[in-house]
Length: 543
Image 1 (cartoon, rainbow, N blue to C red):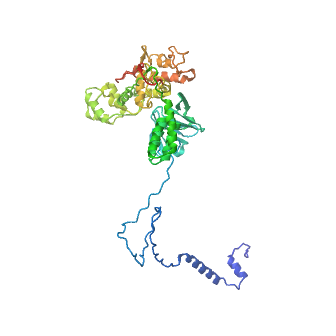
Image 2 (cartoon, one colour):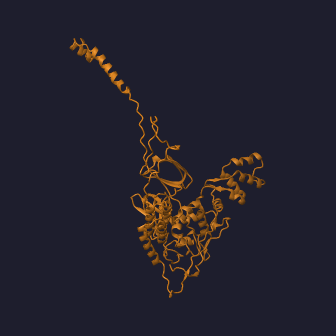
């Protein structure tokens, strides 16, 4: 409504209603509504009183036909009015415990993915991180928790990543070489084979004797995959003696895997415990298979044929102190890796070389050595030529020349092509043997380094420091039509340094020229092994 000046004026609605109905008084109804609301709100808190429950007279106990599955009802708080006519001679101190529930036997199938015993956890040492669509990172793990992971790359730099801000974090598998793995690709494909390397750039597999490489970016994950023997041991130890169905299933699985001796052992053990009809039938089949595999004896058995005995593989490798000493001699003081020097080493240097002009005469100046960076102490030791103290220098990182050998030579193609069990990593290696067991470890890698640097074939070195491309290692890796000294004609050999892989040829030359010590002339006592020719032996299988 409008006032006299024409402005719109609003009034409460109840005033307008009161004007329209002047005879109606709303106040009594208002107070009644308020009182009723308050009463309704208070009603839930007024719970009706219940009469106390009368104690029930316990029924006369009756022996159950079967053992009860649940605990008996508790005794009422108020005793019965009439005591029992004949009380028991002795009352039990506590209520009888219920029997353990009967758990149905679980059938165990080693082929199932859900194994009763999980495989041992892998030690996480390296990781590959997809940061975004265009950038990745890889390195050794310095720190790792649920939120943050810290990597040290191949150049020794630390990089920190928040896990919820990267696309994926993949933990790489460690040795030993030849372990069975399952490779899952980004497109869903799956391959199972022997792992040669789970590297930062490639994943190398051996499938049915053929080595193959796959780009790291195409691989989603590399998972450990147990061998049949490992599966057998895992499931055998997980079974209880009274799990007869599971034990029979295990024996049947062994039979399907052609592990007849193990299947026979499991079946005979099962039949000693129970009369299992299916186990008897399967044992007859297993026994028949074993009979077919065993040559029958006859009077006209031919004389045993000579067969070569496989020589034992070499096992003489470097020690960790030898590895550290090689790192010391390959140090580049202008680009040093991480290292440590102890106070004891500094004290010995100051005392033993106190007369040298490199050691200050004043005690205060000598004390300053304890606060210097490790590389400064190492420079002083090099200038003093204190070679007897070099072993006390602890090199934590990897010098550049040795890093090139690891990434561009050893892991890139020597292990995959030269150190296989059918080549120079097996009994037919001839005058050159390259270790392939746990090839990612420093001990194996540096042992192979000395093998390559110190081995000569027909007076020619495997690594020629004067002309790197004349190295036998380089020439043997070239195609026969391009090599001046081609690789001997042996079955299964394939060239590595082909024309389409010029980068590997350049990497080899760069590595040779980066080495600070030639021909492996480190103060390390080590003689490269060589495989002897197999000697004939009498008897045994012809296989």
